[in-house]
Length: 480
Image (cartoon, rainbow, N blue to C red; front, side):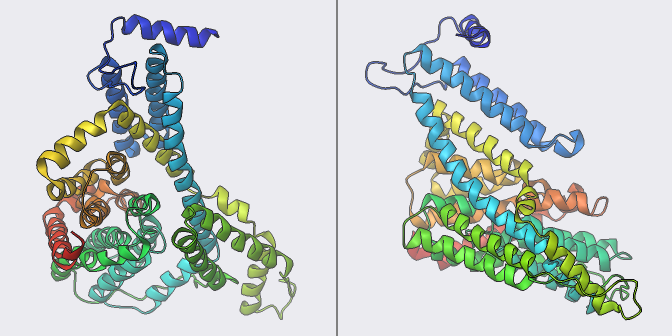
């Protein structure tokens, strides 16, 4: 036993000299630590870590750091407690289960992020932004276009990337109308979160539900109408507060899509189809299908590098603007490297997911999630509990909240699982800090889109939240 291990045991024995665990050690290897100092310390560690996550922007501390440390501390305390009672393998078995769930989520997201980075590098989203700016729509038309595009793009891409693209357009054309930018950003956040709720690929929470096998791929689309109502209700009211007139035509760089952009979009859709087929027909984890789809991109990257051309000399008179564009593309093709796209993934976000899943999994293993499940789903009923889950996701974050629900695995109807998928996905729109899209846009449109500007519209967004729940209960009544 090394020095650090001895020190950890001494600390444990010093602080917990007379622990009485609610368990029958002769029959079970699961200890109830909820009414024990270990449980209280674990709750305290998680609470402190999450406070640091909430104040990430003010502290300039990446959100993954506190939750990674919290997860490690929580499982250290659990492992020591179990070893003291002779259950050396119990904590290991539990943590391996949680780690496997994270590994599937990790590889799925890594491939999706790699494809999104490849599309960004090829200028796919820039071309869309350039088209929107060029058309010189009115403010009201742009407001609806940005929201509707955010709603329909986020189910395929992620809501964060979608919101940033649409916000960039709003900032570009609304330089003289900050009110237009602020209201448009709110509508974009609502639309991106709502659009992500009816697709397994639109949000982390829907992805977790799909990978868990609780909702089949095609069943997510039954949430389309409730999700659209969630966006439509607040957007229809906001419409009357959008300034009249049209923005001045923007003169700037020409945004074009580079060679292979469309092919990468098609390959991404093919990758999604592969993941769905692996899950539905072969009963394999969707992450395996996504990793197979990564091979499509790698082979296409090989093709781009092998077929690049560099035509002409930039110093020659015959080198016109079209030649410049082609030469730029060819240079891009020569340097195209899929591993650079992998390196450009949101690693802080991926490690944040790890910390959250492992920490919440530890709290569940201690026994707290079972207590919460009994209170919420047993006493309040599943409908009220699932509505509360959506509200909590606006205050905390929908990822730990949904993972907690999945870990609790309450006994409820299929319609209720669809309801909690909906509420966890759209509930984050109630506050600007309730979703990754909202947090990102506060930084992107700093001083224009703020917590306070979003909070003013929270009652209107809440109308859409309530309306979407009623629409789901009505339209999907057969699922209950």
